Length: 119
Image (cartoon, rainbow, N blue to C red; front, side, top):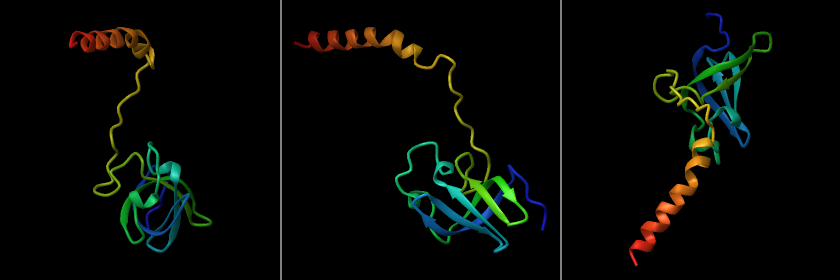
């Protein structure tokens, strides 16, 4: 088997699910955990909304210990169900909430005017 290293995309089989994450295996040789924080950037109510026992999915290797054959895995930045390709994320703006702060009052006033003009 080729040497597995961090950031590799590998195909794994989901073998178990707990509230804190999903367990996976690679060829019954390496075992891994996809921690709930590595499932999605959004809120994860249930791991089963993303994967189920028996699913064959792609996962990215976050960390690997060849001695114990344990891996930390992630699926939140890849197309884990289809191709394993990296997903493009929208870049965060440097302005943060500044546009909202600058526009909130005019937007509210505009909406109030629209509503009151109807009467």
